[in-house]
Image (cartoon, rainbow, N blue to C red):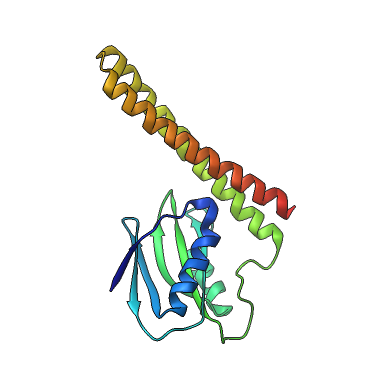
Length: 176
């Protein structure tokens, strides 16, 4: 088992798919993602396409959703619970017939990007609102070190979520 520390943000999951495919071509098959680490098992090098989709808890029956992908030749291999839903990792051998894409039209991809943007912005707003009382407490306690640390953490998160929202907006506009 090989562990690789790597971070991809929500707005760049396509780069994650490319990375997993490159690893498969080197003989490392993706098994799971946990604690900012990818876990791979050594096998023979293969041309495998990986695709990632987000299935929210309000997106309908999960079994029907997975069957739709199976019917198109995609095998679900890992589920990562996050934000009232989960990232679903699929794989398909490059030799198999059919499309190597899970989105057959621009509108379905736009729908995914809008869903991701809405959910992550909601989470970012919750995060910012949770930090405001901590900032007030640090001022009341007259603790400049704590205040500075909280401002840095809050600023980094605002930057990260702002970047994700802008990138997802750009992707939506390019598809329209």
